[in-house]
Amino acid sequence: MMKKDNAMIQIKKGALEFCVLAVIAWEERYGYEIVKVLNEHGLTTPEGTIYPLLARLKKEGLVTATWRETAQGNPRKYYRVTDKGKTALDEFKRSWSEFTETVNSILKGGPA
Image (cartoon, rainbow, N blue to C red; front, top):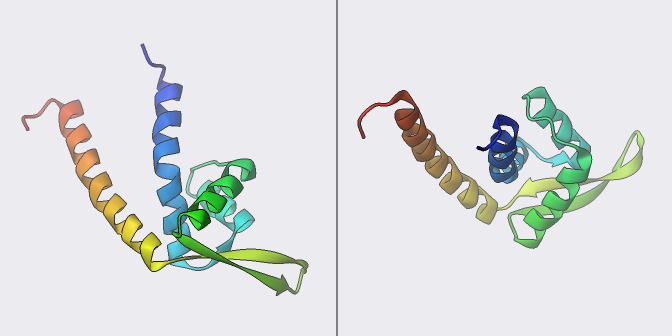
């Protein structure tokens, strides 16, 4: 039997990439800022998870990254969603909506 925590970890892993894309789609952000926004929304994610994910999104052409100087000192890498990333996010939103409706229907025991 799958433990509840295990199930939630698997769901989170599958959706995290698109949650990060959505957060960046709202506005350009740097890595730690993305972590803070996810945490504020209850999706607690360590920085060590986000940076490799951002590198993968960049490699796949879903985001671009630009280094910028800041008034606080160290330069920061800001991420922006590309057109390809927006398309992927839109497709995920449609799929997620269909998926959650299906799962909710099954869990409630209603007919298809």
